[in-house]
Image (tube, rainbow, N blue to C red; front, side, top):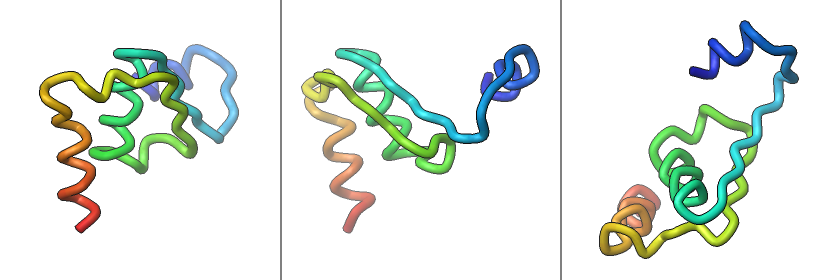
Length: 64
């Protein structure tokens, strides 16, 4: 998907992922599981409660 966007549109080499609510959850999930995809991450009121806080638990496990 990123390569498709970069091929179709002019883009800067610096990538930022921004999302709100469930989009914010996607931001945090990507940060936890694929941090190399973007240079910066902004989650606005991310729905971290979703799936019994699964992404929060993943982040804790990966940080240990």
